[in-house]
Image 1: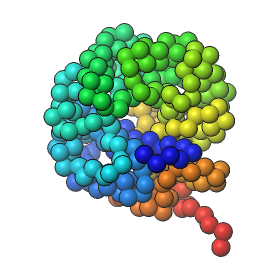
Image 2: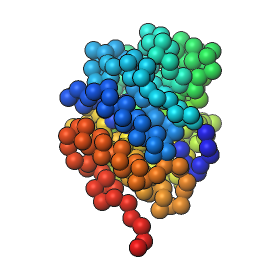
Image 3: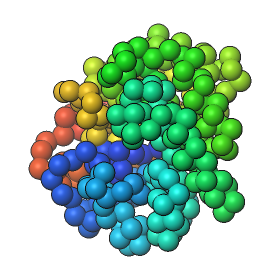
Image 4: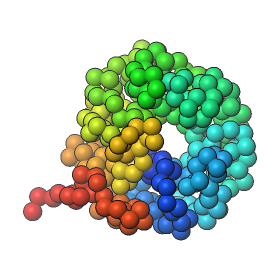
Length: 301
């Protein structure tokens, strides 16, 4: 992949759409994936191989991956919860996988009906098989800043889960503000604790939600700490069903605009990205709520 100052890891097709109640056609998802690649995104999380009954919106994962036009130089990771999901991912032609746990026992139990330890055990054969096949792997640590059930989450818990995922052999960790409660001081606290534990910024991505309007402030704080990979969802879709009123993930278009104004290269064309955002808006039948989605970019006349 071409080297830029910042990597943007697009989660819209998976995390952005998974909680939508109205069915979205496979064709609309494939068009979304194509438009994202047209915009220059080179890491696009395509879907999830969880049980269809758990996430009906992504029940077409097998068909979607079979029909996906894979662009040269674009990575299309998929979320895989267990060995069965891994079998499906392999059969569908995936070549990059993500596993998902949390820093909160209460959230992990509510979300996937496992303890953190049980989730790590479930991921062990998945990551081992992926490494055997030479696939890129990622581990998500959700509720790293707060949990809807237990409240505050200490940084020691985040470090403990992160270390377990790295011991499995994942290439990268995504540290998530799942319910959108973090501010810059929290970002400094958590990234600082990870750094003290020997987990450098080069192994980390940050996954911010804009539930309370702090996502871009948190990106700025993370940039100052050396983080160079950020998850984002075109159109600002997604969010957490356990965070009432959640505004969704950090919007890719808002992130791109910030990075452009900061003079940081990332390889994504904002105008083309807004075409993808408008496709999401039309598909979901509601207007964009993202700042740049509404106002557009800005160039000096």
